[in-house]
Length: 282
Length: 282
Image (cartoon, rainbow over all chains, first blue to last red; front, side, top):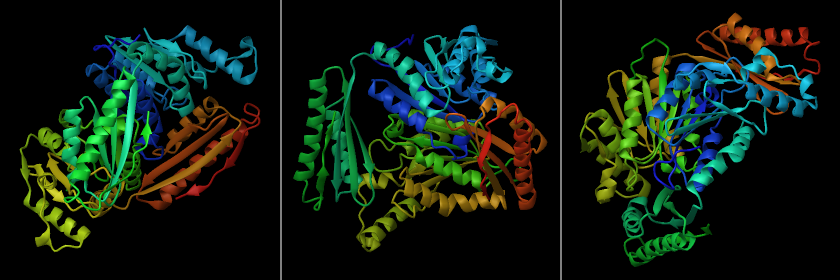
């Protein structure tokens, strides 16, 4: 269970384990996917961290996230059977617990191999390396991996819940959707995130900046992010989250109208400006 | 200048500043691009960190990287003119320096605007927000941005060099290639990274794992990373770096032959296995 400090708020950090990300071989799409999901559910992602496949590096990253007191830590990668899959050891060190063979995890792994190979469970014999996937810090619980074999690992430490999962994107998505998402939904509940995008051409970001600041003040708690998209093209993302769909939508639309009106009023200062489009995505 | 603790070795960390990455809106391609570049140049990337557009979060991330004593910290994002561009403030706090208007930075910004708008430099009048881009922690130096307007910021702190640059990918690439890359080349010098990829079908990762472990021991200092690519398909990346091209190449080829021979010898144990391809990429 996730303990949440403020009702309706859930702060999360995402730790990626894998040298392939640090060498630039692999693009960290897992962190993006998880962040999009958590944000849409009403959570707030505070940090992404990527570390090498080294026990000390993993342990330190997890300890630091625990010390920052976030509600949810998601760790991806390093739970497989190979020599450089050492997330289990890193977690044990961070939690100051011993690594032990977990019987339910052995059961889950056996069941997954039997399903994937079309064997009866009695026919599945796990090798030593395959049994490693069932080792977990004492006090942790395994979570079924609906896509691959290695189970996820869940651990409570104070008010922080840590969920570790293998790094294969389909497995991250499988474990998140089957286990983490329902858990966040129960805690945050009924949250809606609205976003409106304005693409504005012919004006520099520094001219739009004061209008954005004013709009954010007038229509708080909205958030407006401006993205320079190349020569004199600015994308504004206006977002607002909350439980009352109508109120949230109104707020976002009002802020957009405010900015558009200000641009039109200031036409002498920023001639050539035009709003390219403003699709409304709920 | 980058101070390097071990000759020929350069440890780096990459800090990304931007809420758009933490909400999943933007994929962190900058970190991947920078990591690929630094790795190919012979450096080692130890960590990626992404934080929100908040002064405290940026300051803490930079302080932590400084405390880990890496040689190079690259910070991307948050150097533009908008309200949420607060990397300057975060850096000042981390370096414990005051933020001051930097005259060379004002000069660079004026020069870039005059180039981009086809004006004479005397005709360029900077607004207050545009002048913000010239504010830097005392003791920092501006670095010309060959693509956009906001200059990069360079700061030495003990043996650590911090280089901050705006987050627009083309600007990251421009500042890295014009300023950081020559600097890393001078320090690491003549490094070559070799990589060979083996795609192996019909055998599970846990069967290949012991062979990989043995090959890494026998042909040290090579590194082999195995990537599960879906149902019984494993990609092995065998990499080795060094200054002697022939020695490095030999080592990688020997390790690959060792693994291939072991798979063929163990054919009874892992029948159905085949090596799909083994392109050699230098």
